[in-house]
Amino acid sequence: MTTPDVTVTVIVYNDAARLPRAVASLRAQTHQNIEIVISDDHSTDDTPEVARRLAAEDSRVRYLRLPENSGGCSAPRNRAIDIARAPYLMFLDSDDELPPRAVELLLAAHREREVDFTMGAVRRVRVDNGRRTTWMAHLVRERRTLDGIAADPRLLFEHLSTSKMYARAFLDRHHLRFPEGIHYEDQLFSAQAYGLARAFTIIPDPVYTWYIEPYAAESSASISNQRHKISNVADRVHVQRLIDAFLGESGQAGLREDKDFKFLKHDFRMYAGDLPYRDDAWLAEFAEIMNPYLDTLAEGAYARLPRPERVVLELLREGDLAGVRLAARGLGQPVAPREVTADADGTPYWGNSVPTTERARRELDLTDLELETRPFSTAFFRHEITDLRPGPGAALTLTVRTYDPGLRLPVGPQRAGLLLSPGRRRLTVPFRLDPVRPGVFEGRVRLDLTRARLPLQGFEGVRHPQVRLQQQGLAHSGLLLAPLALPALTARLESGGAAHRITVEPEGRNPGRLQIRWQPVGVTARVLRPVVRRIDRPRVRNAFRLVTSALK
Image 1 (spheres, rainbow, N blue to C red):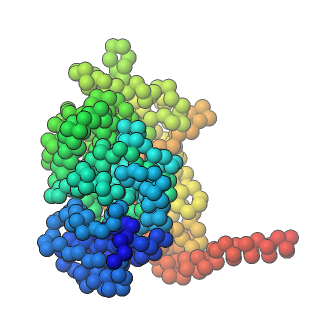
Image 2 (cartoon, rainbow, N blue to C red; image 1 turned 120 degrees about the vertical axis):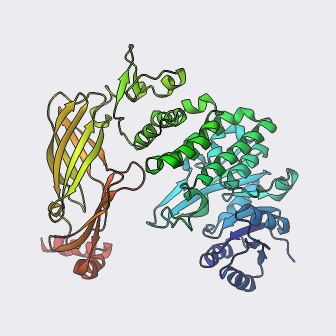
Image 3 (cartoon, rainbow, N blue to C red; image 1 turned 90 degrees about the vertical axis):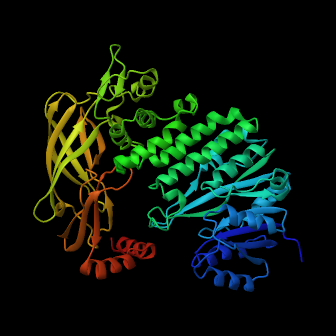
C-alpha cells in the first residue's frame, strides 16, 4: 500500500446525516494522497452503515468503531492516531468540513520549513442565517513562522485542534495525546502543543469550515453551547487548572498572565452574557465553582479587561448576585449602571456605596468610562421598561425609566423618541421623560405597530426599538432593556394590505432588549413574497432601469 502523506481523522457519534458531507470534503481535497479514518464513538444510529458504505466507495477511507461510547472527542481521536499511517495528522468533526485546498496548503507549509505543526484560518458559518466570519481573524491574518508560543502569546485564544496539521513525530516525541474523560480537551491539548512546539507556521488561508448552531436544542447542542449546565462550568475550570499545572511543570509560568487573560476574556465572558437569565441557585453554584479559581489569576490579567467586565467579575467575587445580573446586562454595549457613588475625592464607583476594600475600589472604579465628559453621542445611559401593557390591536403602552449617572441631561423634562425600523422606513414615536430624582427620568409612550410602514410584500425579521435623546443639536440612540420575565405577546396585524403575526418579547440573550418579530402570514406569505422575490433580482432590476431610462 502507498504510504499516505496525511491522515485526516473524522470523529463521529450519532451523526449519520452529516458524516457523508464531512467525508466528501476530504475526498474533494486537491491533495489526493491522504488517508481518511472515520473514528466512530460507538454510535447507536445509522452511522455504522453509512461509514461502511463510505469506506467501500473509496479505498482511502477506513472505518474504526470504538467498543463503547467514551462520551467525548478525545478517545476516538486517540484511537485513530494509534492506527494512522501518515507522517502528518489532522482532525475533523463530522458536522464540519475542510475547504478543498486545506490539506495541500498546510502540507506545503510543513515542506517549506520543518516545524512541529502548521495552522490556518477557520471559517465559521452560522447554520441559522448563513453568516460567515473568520475565527480569531487577527491572529491568522499574515503568514509567519514562530519559534514557540512566547513569540505571540495571543495565540492561546486560538485553541482549536482542528485548525492544525501536526507532525506525527512531534506528537510521539512528547507522548502528546488528547486527554480522555474530560470536556474542553482541545484547550488542554492545544496549550500543550503550543508550549512544546519548537516552531510552528501560520498561514492566512482557510483550512477549516466550522458550522455553528447557536440555537440548537439543548439535547443536541455542542459542549460549548451547554453553558446552562453547572457541570459545564466545572469542566471548563478543571481544564484551566490542568493547563496551569502544565505551564508550571514545563517551565512556562511566564505565560500565566496571558493565559489568565484569555480565560477571563474568552471562557468567563461566554458565561457572563447569560448571567442575567440564571436563577439564584444556579448563580450561587456558579460562584462557588468560579470564585476559588478567579482568586488564583494574575492581577495583570484583570487590568487588561474592559471596565464593565471587571465590574461583573468583582461583583461575583463579592457574592453580590443581584449586582451581577444588573451589571452583566450591559456587557458589550454602552449601557450605564443604575447608580454611581463618588468618594470624597470625586472618584466614581459602581453601585450605591463606596467600596471598602482595596481590590473592590480598584475594580469598581468607573473613572475610565468618562461618564461626565465623553461625547454625548457615545454617552452612557440606561433605558429600562418598567411596565408594558398591550392595548387594543397591535398597540403597546410602555413605561420607560432612563438612568443618567453622568448627569448629562439638564434638569427638567426631556424630549425623547422611540425608534423602530421594520423594512426600510423608520417609525419615530415622540414622548416625554420626566425627572424622578437627579439622574433618573421616567416616561410613558404608546407604540402602535400598525403605524410602521411595511413594504408591499411584507417584512420578515426581528427589530429592537431604541430610545433617542437630543441635546444641543447632538443625538444619542440607546438600546431598550425589557423585563426578562415578560411573557411573549402575539397579535395579528394588517398594515398596507400586508398581514403579519407579531411577537413582542425579551431578547432572550445578551442584554435582553425588547424584541419585536414580524412573520408574514396568509396571502402575504403565500403569494406576495414569492412574487416579489422573483421580480427583485439583479437582472430584472437592471432591465427595469434600462427601460425607464430609454423612456425618458
